[in-house]
Image (cartoon, rainbow, N blue to C red; front, side, top):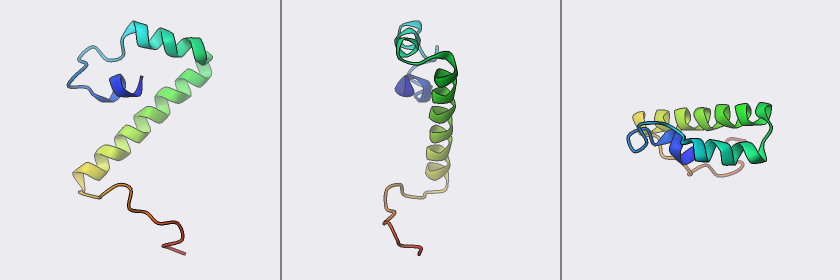
Length: 65
């Protein structure tokens, strides 16, 4: 679901019914809505990092404290 929801150029139609139905088998409606929200937020933050050329994954625990 995350892959289809974030790779817009590859999946012009968005998430397929098959993928949506499979996710819906595992999550009730409120949790599915939360999952979609989190996928969208993570995608937005990743795109922000790409646009500002901020590398992801270089955080070291305790580096700011």
